[in-house]
Length: 385
Image 1 (cartoon, rainbow, N blue to C red):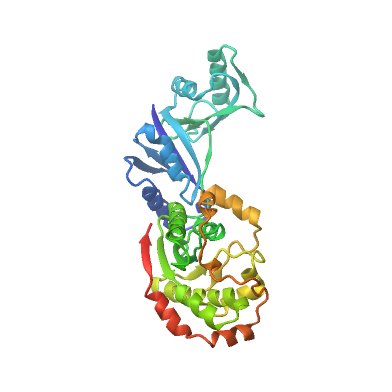
Image 2 (tube, one colour; image 1 turned 45 degrees about the vertical axis):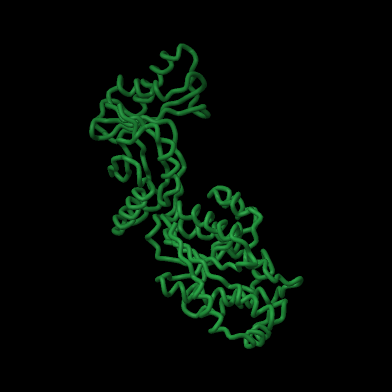
């Protein structure tokens, strides 16, 4: 009898002749997630098995695998011979000492002498007799379920639970995007959502040192590290926009400060995305959430992006929905650390909510746009996470 981890995939089942491409990507990502651990990895009948691992590391392996996009469910199972005595020995090890239960059986081996219903009835009866009244059968709302999967090769898998995976598609199957990541709640969630659709995500962060401190920069590194656990690693690029903010503050109307800064960010992001081979920009904008995220503000930002699409996966979400996703991915407690990002520097008292493009262009003409962008690129730092 051996403990194994069963991995079941989700949307990959819907793929036709290209299924092998997605399966190979998932296998690669599983190996990346389990790097540093000793194990054997086997594919069988549209599922994967992790075996021959240190059983004291079971929970750690499960936590790693739960973050691999493309994984639908996981189960920790006992692999045993398929005869009834062996099934009973395995079931005894997994059954609770008391409470209600039921047995669910599935026969992959249709030549097995008992039907699925007969296996469940026989095994349930043996567990009842063994418990001496401590267990009761409840097929509708049991406190636990013993599940039996009889395979074609003379072995069976016995387990009690399906552990929810990350679902989605394997990272690396849907192109590359560049996420504009801040130290807030929204942008890491946006990156997480695009990685869930199979996109490889790199991160670009704009900082305003020395107006913002080193802790604010480290906060973004921590957020990108959380994202990297789901996105199979990310490259984090840091660029200073301090000089751009100072120029805007000195020469332009204060109410357009945020809009003008974001236009610079989008220009820089598009050029860097093209340089690294990214095919889109990703932001954490949600319509109407703050002054710069009105439809007029978004239109202004988009107007400087000439070649790439800008994806806003959170555009229709309210704040509570975004927070729930942030908590689930493990980023929320980092996001609410009280370290300010660049958008809080020189913040006007009354930012323009519905900026007019003609006003923006008039103010922008006061600036050396290309010179400021070129200087920003000289400050770039790269961190591989």
